Structure formats: structure tokens, C-alpha cells
Image 1 (cartoon, rainbow, N blue to C red):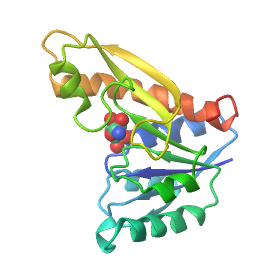
Image 2 (spheres, rainbow, N blue to C red; image 1 turned 135 degrees about the vertical axis):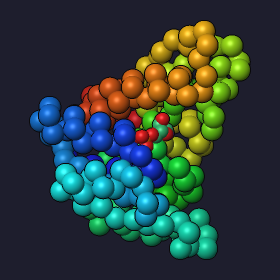
Image 3 (spheres, rainbow, N blue to C red; image 1 turned 90 degrees about the vertical axis):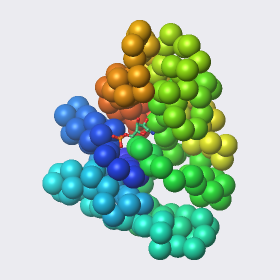
Length: 191
Ligand code: GRF
């Protein structure tokens, strides 16, 4: 099986997936890491591992449709079985999402269906939640609403701010996302 991972920045979830895939001998390889930002830090990590990288810069396109089409062309060049969004910060159009329906995953830093969208940790603290977490789900046209593959919960502790909570959640994301990707690759979880 072939996986293409899409990032926009740091790429720590991508790194966790690349490492787990190599360490645990998955029946899958990361065929490429693509970014919408040329300066995404995660690209250097992928290159150092000998993984193909490419950038499709959203700023070079004057419409979402044109960006989505160029991104799809880049993805399809690597013929992936699974597309993995890992800190990919562009909203994708419906046609793009439909093209990869049932074979595209995202990780969202909240216990969906609570807190879709941005600033999840701040919103969870402000709401007085005692737990936060992360969700891996199949991507559907409605943002952060697709079928859930896996979730992890972490406590919100007294004195937490956005930063401390994000760090606690991120640590768990790095365990959750590789497990969820593996389950999907091995056919143990389908949309
Ligand atoms: C993660 O918290 C992820 O859940 C969210 O953006 C962050 C990406 O971090 N969508 P990284 O780029 O994987 O380090």
C-alpha cells in the first residue's frame, strides 16, 4: 500500500507516521510528503528519510478549484491508496474531497463532534471541559465531520492554558495517528 501525507508546517504527526511505518514493518510505504507551503519544516525531515517531497503553493493559484486540481495531480502522480492530512491547514473543495472519499484521513485536535474548526484547545478550556483529545476521521465535504476512526482523550488540568493542553494532546496524537493509519491500511477500519 502507498501513503501520501499532506502537511503545512512542523509535520510532527507525519514524522510519527513515517517512524512507525518503518519501525513496525507495516504493509505500506510513505510514497511522498506534499506541502502547500514551501517553508514547511516537515519537508526537510521527509527529504532526510529519502522520501519524495513536493510543494503545491496555494499562493500560486487564483482559485481554490485551481489549487485543488494541481494538488490532486501531484497526489495522483504518486498513486496512493491512502491520503493522510497531518496538520494540513487548507480547506479542500467538495470535488477534491469526493475524489478521495473513503481513502483520505485527517487528525483533528478535539474530541469530535465537539469543537470542529480552529482554536480547539482554547475553546475546550473556556467551556470548562475536563477532557480534551484528538480524533482521526475520514474526510468528507463537511469540515471535521467525517466517520471517526479513532479517538484519544486527555485530562484538562487546573492551570492549563492553550499551550500546555496542546502539548499534552499532541503527544497522544503521535500515538493515535500511526495506529489509526495502520488500521486503515490493514483494512481493519473502513469508511
Ligand atoms: C496537530 O495538533 C493536528 O491535530 C492539527 O494541527 C497540528 C499539526 O501538528 N490539525 P504537526 O504539523 O503534525 O506537528
